[in-house]
Image (cartoon, rainbow, N blue to C red; front, side, top):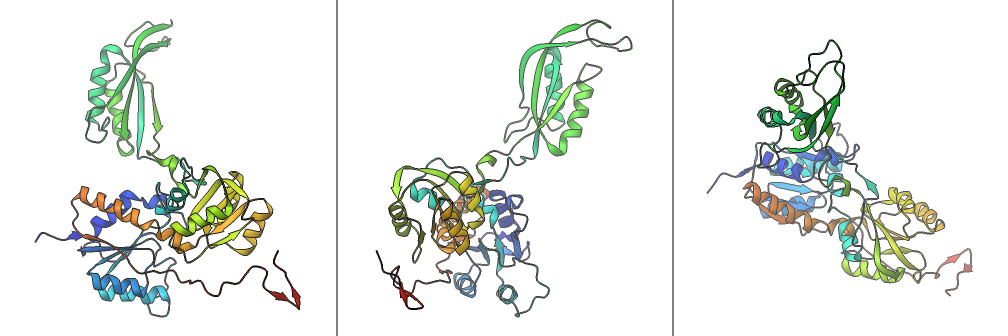
Length: 395
């Protein structure tokens, strides 16, 4: 048998797929329990760390639990059984089970926790309700202007200094021809052209990618290799690929308007929810739909600004919902657990593909424990209630 994976390898894999820098500032994500040098033979993917999921991990031989919701959400003053988080953390340690969390960094991913709802409704092209921002790729674009017969030498010098590497390709550069103009002063020593007159020189605009940590070395190499006394160059930050698609929530449009009741029926059939709460006229037709997996009522204003007819999320509060109805937006509470649990199969599939690409061999297991704390009970007809003897008659 080969050597087991290291916990550090799985932490790196999860962070490469869902960077901790994408997580909200208030969030607690990453490795929460465990030694990075510990071995990992099996990984259990779940929504919540509970006593039942820890039992499940033990029975399945999983020594790493990857949970969407962090176990240690707030700092612990002491590690004792006096709190739920302390009790479960102690149990995990005693059982030899590490805990790793991917929370809001998975929520904002594309795809993330909202895609089960948007895919189920066929919203097609969607955008984030709260975009994460362009993000930082960790690289910059270095642009300079070189006399045409010196371009090759400058590219070689920049490549030797760490510029021009894209994936498995080195010395990557782009150039386009143009004309550079300048007027050297009387005290200048121009490599080409004459002092105190406007000179026009055939130049190449040269562009190369440079890792942020190598910018200083690249600029020094550029100055050494460039024939000009004064070297003109620009450094542009580069956005991470796909960053514009990341963010909390989604907004999109149904292929055609549907009655609110029909949308609710689709969600009830497609999500693992014990039931839905619907606020609004069931006959009203809706087209523009906003959604957020988990607890998303903090995004109600964003949904209204985006022109949503309907907002689908979980954990909707009473007054927030009344205000949204007043502003003309219907609401569906599909449940915190149901909307996010539906996103776990995709999480596990992406982890499996990434692990195979890195040569990791630990088994990936899907939790079968339902951690939804709620169950539907005693549904009553709307209108069948009394207030101080006054009966509301159903219409």
